Amino acid sequence: MSTNILAFVVVLGVLIFFHELGHFLVARLFGVGVEKFSLGFGPRLFGKKVGLTDYRVSAIPLGGYVKMMGEDPTSEMAPEDIPLSFTHKHVFKRMLIVAAGPAFNLLLPVLIFYGIFQISGTYILKPSIGGVQENSPAHAAGLQAGDMITAIDGTPVANWDEMAALITGCEGKTLSITIRRPEWDVFSVTITPQSTPSKNIFNEEIQRYIIGISSAGEVVNQRLNPIESLTESVRQTYNITKLTIVSIVKLIQGTVSTKTLGGPIMIAEMAGQQAKEGAVNLVFFIALLSINLAIINFLPIPVLDGGHLLFFLIEAITRRPVNTRMREIAQQAGIFILIMLMIFVFYNDITRIFSS
Image (cartoon, rainbow, N blue to C red):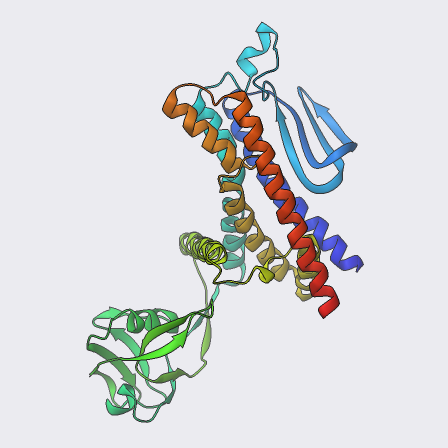
């Protein structure tokens, strides 16, 4: 239990810090005064005031905030403070300040993955054939265990995933597959993949094109230079972000069960498990959560960053701020939605505990 709590605090602290750091740095870049930079909500536990900003740690560790000067458009300000006011900045600058929080949550996984790739490289599954199904297209073409696929239609393949993507994406057309076989050196065969029913990661029925081979399971470590690590880090972050967005859409459509949603209890348990597995697992878990946090914050729900961005977008189009009363109503609706969501994920967490 103590490991779970400690890991939860570390994970949440890193996510919140990076999120609020994004708001803070871009606000200062545009000359906005920042009064408070807080990790946590509620009463101030400790901190230090440097210049205008009070850097603090607060009692409730379930969030954080950056309080900027002039953030409340209805508040009065002294004339000398107006140049430091958030509200008095151009709408596009305000949009960038708000977007910087979730944007930094997307930057964090890139940095984490970059560090992992630089330290340990990446592990790839070689496109080596371990088995060939009888009466399959590969069997008819004479492929056998021990063969390695090196190219498909002239496109080199470096790993099993690249090879599988080219085969499944062929839409049934005949492929020229280049094979390396020890005693034959290199040769090519033509194979027409066959369509077969399958299920994707969301348990949906789909049709996949296959040639009827299985992997030999040969995994190799590949060292990456700094440029390759950066490229791979961005690619990894993009792929996980894309998958997360698709998951949210599937959740809304009802394809993915809402029982998969988890709250603080589930995060604490998972953080504790990853911490026990080692530092690399824990930082990878932080990267995944950071991507989720970024996407959630970009949702156009009032109270969240995405809601503020929506208001500012309307202001940019209409050339006038959204009516104060309308903003209040929208924010109340947003708070209601978030409270309902929190209750639901807590219910899921508790149900999961008692059913395990």
